[in-house]
Length: 567
Image 1: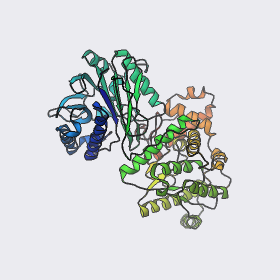
Image 2: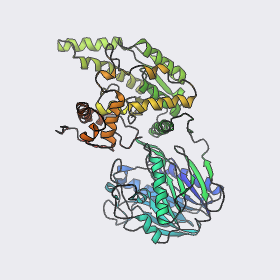
Image 3: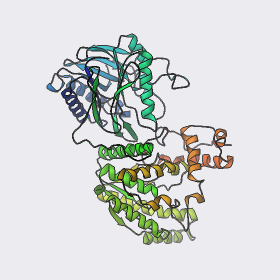
Image 4: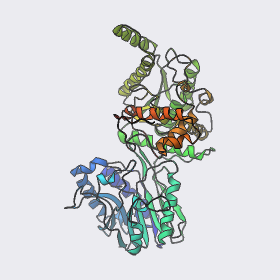
């Protein structure tokens, strides 16, 4: 382990905000320098923000990245005596198509001293890096006088190829081994690894296994913050050559950790004024972790899209209650407008629970009766058709009236409309296009119903009081679009449904294997049919914050028009 101190700067960057990202890099470097660090590491593509996607096809975007890097490399008081490793998109002249490398610049002594390029390009789930980047043919190690060590420069996926973690290695190269053979005394891995349930622990095992396998310490820094549907959780770490974690940054908050082999204790530095949401003290740590991930994702989605407030339809049910609790923590309760929209079928207890929730959270609240609009819709359509609407169409009119109201309020106030559907509903199409699916972000769209209840309990545990009313947890789930309706009129019980969904969507098991888990074949076939026939709805849904191994959205790409059916 190098004797000089290393800073892991997990910063929250915004795609395309070169000036803002550079300012964050300078601020983190100054914090680290004040704590005695000699080497400061920043995440993958920290300069441009990650993932930039098709901005990488825009020449001006790449030119700005290069110009900003050159400006950061110029001699300055804030960087004197420091070595910096900064992720950036490199577009060297004459590079073959696509002409861009995912690169790490070693900035030292007033210049870019070395550039390491990403060797392994992921093309699975939400990743499509072979579309944008060239793969490096060689791993890069470079001497750093400021750090007092020879550094091996690696980027994210370069470390994810250990056969002990995958049935078959994903790649035929081991860049970390190449760096060790090139004399690296410290391997640097700059990363932008999105959050998913179980991912932080997996990452720690992966980085530790790589360090132990190669007998070289690894400094791993991960991005933090939300960019579109992806939530990056940080959790940066310094790992010794024996695979043991020597220092680690917290999850879900911007921070700098300074540590090293000089015998001094690790130091945690926070940016003044940066928001943080500490772990809760409830019994369900996993649910609390999901809660924190969703708060971060929602906060950053709103902030980076220019929204300061949100509007939410409050039905009195568990989904809208959890979404409101998340929004209150992410944006501040004074910036959340909860709107109850009862129809002729809404129960009094649902109306009471919606009002109680808003009061408990401190939200702005209003109840708008939709009965006059609902009746007018039905009457006009019945007159045009010369007969009443069928049952399904009549039910959906209510949801679409509510969607119209929420979007009108969103337009009126300049607020982000949050849709409140969960993953179970999106999976089987138990939602109404242009109705309850209306909105700019599906906050809990990757949270299955059974997990919704757990995360909602975690919200109450965090608050230390009953924020979400107890009756919201205990009453049967219902869309309340017709008399005495419950979700289980048309769906299997949620514990059964969610197990089938997880087996199919996240584990990708065949029908026979799902049945073998104890489910009736006809139930499995019915659920799988609902999944594949509801793709057209999901394609029109708001972006979904990803917190599972496989979320609906860009990481799951199925055709809408097809003839496949489960036999």
